[in-house]
Length: 367
Ligand SMILES: [Ca+2]
Ligand SMILES: [Ca+2]
Image (tube, rainbow, N blue to C red):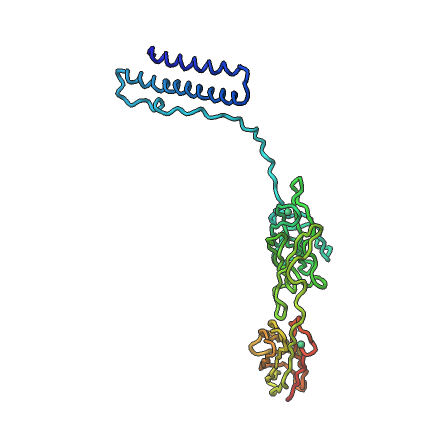
């Protein structure tokens, strides 16, 4: 290192030591403190600047003096010095315990407690779904993950079916306890309708918490004459599960279908069978349109209806104030000397009729 550089470094360090010595001097008020701090800061900056410049210049000069030095300077020498990053020790990492919410799959609910069904044979625990047509205890048909209590996490609503109880359904809520076990919070949807006539056939989460249950008028898929399925909303109100939206009953009777029939004139017996035609008249008295209906002919003898399997005529909806006529060709197996016959016709499937007395008619049979 040359004498010139040694002088520069020595002067800068002397100035720095002088400034540091001032730190122990008595203060002279806030203005003096601010001035001293400002002066100290300037001295330090100057000192560091001189030292920094020397640290850069010296290796470059040494490199220039190197007789082998037409090579590019080492990259690390030319880099602008950057202040060392402030190293702070992060707080000790203590991983939070994994918090699981109350979501379960159908499989995870196996063995979980089941709500009470009418039929004791349904059991008290959820079992696996049975094969089609096989009666079983309570099984989970499907689940929906929704908020079913007062905490923000999700729980599980399970649509439970017991096929030994005429395919009765319940919807129960499940959560996870502190040990991770499945616990039943309660029954979200219990028995619906008189003697459990109505059943839940599907569930889905409700945006505001709770579930939306699709309720059928009866257990089975919609039958002719039944009201349309309904969507009913259920949620936890802070103390119990309750219905919070949707219809609470199936629509009251808003139509009156009636049935009349022309006489049935039968032809002569051939091979023990007699064939004839009859016209049925179906009238809707409103105020609403009907659903689809079944009309059934009944007699004490074997009867076939042309174009209609069995003795049932499936008919579409009848509009309010509409009259439909249906002409049927029927064949009845009768023995000789067994006429006239008694044949009844009736709307057998319409459950939402305000007057059922006019749903049936006796067909007059003539020779
Ligand atoms: Ca919750
Ligand atoms: Ca009627």
